[in-house]
Length: 463
Image (cartoon, rainbow, N blue to C red; front, top):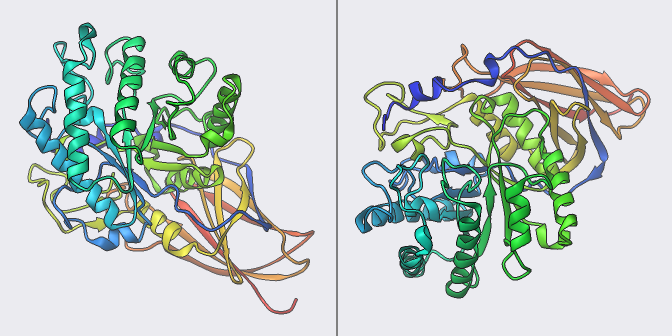
């Protein structure tokens, strides 16, 4: 597979290239309602971690509050997984173990992808052996025995979450029947629970949001019993449908659980372990996703649109490095720099401290805000879903006629290249606003669909 990471990514369709109308709605921040300390729920990544220890300097992980990884050796150059050969599996397990150790070094949890270690990277050949083919589970059972034993021998249990299969509803990853997948889930769940009783199991990692009309979701819940429901519920949000937001997906999830008489108490741990299409991996939509995940108290892992060795690099597109865009790309190359979107995540994790504040998105869901208060300073991160804008944020809960100093920051892509080096946001300056009728309205008009904004509010003494 090609190692030319940047040219491959640039060939993907971009949300930015589509003609979209500006966002004109109003989002809100309520200073009177706090919702708990920041959890950095959006600071997870799918792959993106080099197998070589310390290849990416620690501060790049720390500054974004990195706390969740997911991997299993998928697309590791020169390997095909357990389904092809034991040496291939061994190389992939070493990759997963390295990613696990890096994640744990930074205090995070790690999702071990069993299908990647097996060899289901996506687009398998016609003769690829899936677990349970011809009702023969011998090889899969032997794989489980081997890999769960490797987990134990490698001291890999603490902070581990196991993912049984990835996107089974897509033939690209599971080109077999639904019934065979359901049997796979039941068998694997039982074995994992027996061998690793303290390790959480995540699933079903379906590509679509939960819905009472989705055949794979309803079949899954029909087959599961209270003893083999996921410890962590997972699905993906990489469809790009603007009608689908974190709010709508969680509401649909709760409706589905209600239909099957499953208490919400059994579904508190939710992980969108792949979020954002490639064109949404820009500052504006990065902020948009952050806000939605935080409001719904769901973990999220950035999707990763790279291939082969580059899949295991760049923190899922938040970093770049020399020769990333030419034939000299080296999987173990160093010299990383941050992108504009990285600065959004850095601001989110490193600057927005204290307590989270209650927020609402615009009525059309295309403008999102995440806000915190620390002492006398309120910080608001705002972004559209990769659209230009002429929008507003209403800040509620301020004293009548109070004077407020507002500092505005812009997170901008350089010259249309989202992989260019960006060391800090642009400071757009400070101004004073006066609170009227119990609220202050922040206005922003911008043509660039990729830019995110931050507002820092400080109440001044006197009127």
